[in-house]
Image (cartoon, rainbow, N blue to C red; front, side):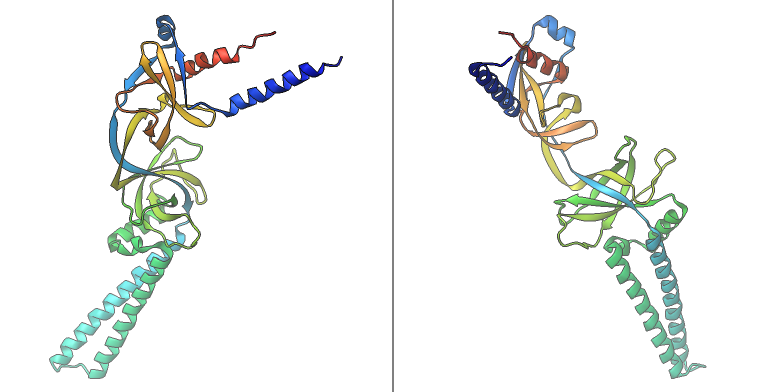
Length: 313
């Protein structure tokens, strides 16, 4: 059975309108519910207020093999011990020579040359560490580097390379939390320093972190992590909402605002930061707004129900 031209045209126009409605997501939409329905839905609200938080950076990261660093630190430690011994020997011979007892000038000169060479070896190894691992390793005290090397050898510490997009020139982290991409368990980390920029086309900067794996969350070289770093020197402001208040729909973030008893408006949000159990919103709601924090999905269902009820002609 064939459809007439008018029916085909009408069906075609309906499909175009329906597609347009799906693509054209409104910035705001309204829904109104009775007191009984609100009670059944368990809808609750909070009053939005502005907060100021430390700037938070999100990064992708990867566990890296620390064996090369351990070897480099061991070489530096041995070279430093040799340089210290050469310096002490030079000082001893210089004192004997000044006292004119059992020290020839040629021995003093030989000891000085040895001390200079041994000290040069230390400087060369330090430069190699900086070029491979960044200045943060070089700035560490000797006992801190020793603890790092022991931890890496024992497996109680692992190294992580974090990539920050649009990172600041100088960065200080007050706290670091990291987790596997498919695991909610978290680990605390420590910022060692910026890594050398090996690719001029990179949009961000690389940072070297360390963390202590646990029995519940063991880490192996090559594993990917997500990292949250709190910036100790920068702050940002916005409206903090629990994650339950944010509704993801049609590729956007939304929140419902109660403008009057039983009357709700769905507003598009601009989320500037995703926090542990909350979000920081920079646009879409304002201080004083009553934001729905329970029942957002039910509100969306109530709002869309009339639009989804088809009527046969």
